[in-house]
Length: 454
Image (cartoon, rainbow, N blue to C red; front, side, top):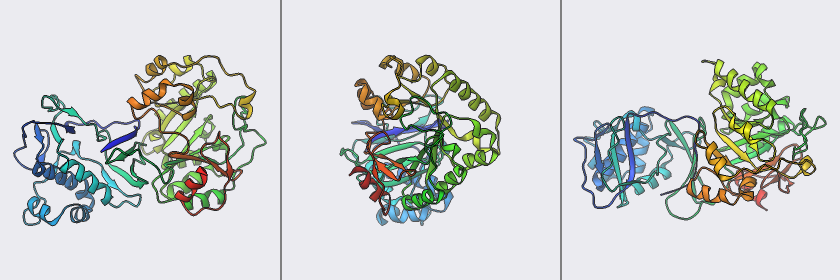
């Protein structure tokens, strides 16, 4: 099993028991007294005990939701069930609630049997994979010589949407934004449909920034709502995201309907903005709070920094049942536009570092001469989650080494896992800053991906 990419959300779970899958050799098994895996120290390496542990995870994850029978009958053989169950009962099998794995489900909410079978084979049958458990309040149990495999998102709880995308499994948390690409071999992942789509819904913007590579302006146009809804209808069913942009997307007259239309079709809508005027619109705020996963807020100037602080302050004032305060905010900063001193003063939160795009009005604008080096970026990453876009990676060779060391810095090249669609001009391509072609009729997300790559 290999994880090729990790994108971690803002929130972490706080556990009292601590279980881990590890690689181990020549170590003595130390199972628990029964078949409940909780705070006690244990170390499992035989197939018998790993099978019990896997079954206990299934009981704890799927049992409370009425999906256990489907999992047991489709993931385990009849011989395995005879060895695991007493008179057909799962009584006694379980995992402490702080260490239960997520429920791996399809975009339609059913257990993803294919993924569970692959995962079971890896955990139970791999001779070097072991399970170690203990209490993290007193130090998790790790026998000497063990190296943690780090093959599982222990910070991930609740439900995980899993989709087979080409030769890999795409694991996605639509509530918190966690994402992983997982293979059970060493072949690099190759996507058949886009994990996310950079979706342009308007070319209108009242700020007219002199560096805008989209050349958005007050003369811009909005994509028709029916065109956008039809687009969502065609790509639904894969458990993907759309990054809605423009122009200034919140100025689209149907913005609140657009995010709802995406959510209703199982698509997670996120958007990029450089405005906080929408905070005073209760209709938009309600739609964002109920539908949107993350807000990418562009910070380029001192005024943007002031708005960023105001946004954080305003979200902090909002409490239950106001869902808006639970929407993630990701700060977007651009090398050549955003001074590094402003980056250092940003409120806590994930940071997306973008390269300068010499297109549109960006062709004639003179960017700042300041270049961000590895030391600066690593410093910013000490207290926050940091990721790069492809343009920044291409302009800084050292970023590829960081991305190889830590699979969360960079999601992949343009067109590998993401594409861009302009519904104002009806165009599609690998990225919004690369040449795009007419968006002809397509059947589904896979067909759209092929069109973008042509």
